Image (tube, rainbow, N blue to C red):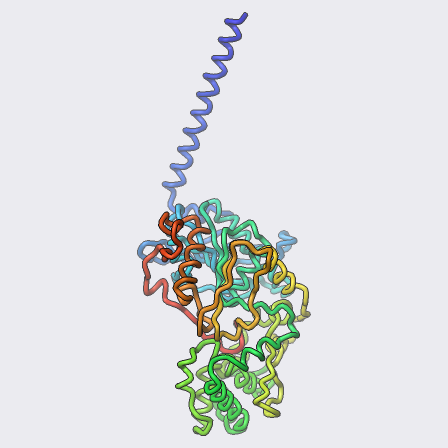
Length: 476
């Protein structure tokens, strides 16, 4: 009997060993098959993913894709839309950076700063409702920060099966806000967040921080120079609006959304000082003319910095989704500009003025305080970078006692293009080291000494060219 039992036990062990070996062999074959399968085929095997175009780039594969998304993530059966996504593929063994600018996505290959630092792959997402990633018909009530975060969550879930290493999210300005909101709603998805120049308008009706900013930014000489040109543009409103009208007629520009050319003209002029500090440096003050120059020089100066095309119907159309969000959740700044006296007829106009009237808007004051509170008390592996002279940084994200392994850094004299490389050497090395660590690729030397941290990928003039795109009008 004992011999029989020993025989049966031996047989079971043999069968189990053979079965385990067979399963392992099958798994190995499956892994080999995945490795052998072209990355494009693996990506296009994802349900809902389709190829728009593949563009060659040395050392990478670059894909422009569409991904089928629910219009409403709470009710997926109520319709879908095609969301544009790009993928800069290096290797599935590398970490992946999830980038969004918060607006349209570029369809040309580029690398965000964290992508170069970790030498990884990059997935870039077009924000919902920016054409062509807009549901038809457009139900604007489905454009909110939670729905957009859920878009990212689904894309991440689909691609994580292929790109299984660490993931970081990043973005600048509205993209930095987007990365932060994504982390708030889906804190388990990413292994780290790098948010650049991300505004944090916690209480929409309380904007005194911006007033204080403009009272001390730069130097008094520069502030006075800018204020004088801005005043002069309103003093000379009549002749300069004539020039504006001639330009509008010649270019087919119309003003139905904002209402009148006069409102559009003043909106551009009131953006002038803000736009200067957003995109320029203190040294650029030398290029600002005296207020005594000709009408044409005043007009050209305003146009070059804040852009007279901004508040035309044609200029506003692309950015309707942003103004809708500013007027429903994100908030928008309002500054006093006392140096203008009674020259201003309208003051800073609300986002409602820049969205077609057939799109309903109601502001929800709960969302921004919720995100701000979450960041202060729950942020983990989050890095915020601001520019000292960037108006959008007047209301930044701040970290409270509950934050862990998270940081807020400021680039001295920096504008809206501030990044990790622009920080002081000590802070830049610290930030780079944290990014490498979060991505799981910090070299041993960096683990011992953060001062040795530097990007893992060599600079590429085409991929890594800093693109501080000048947004005409007051937009992050």
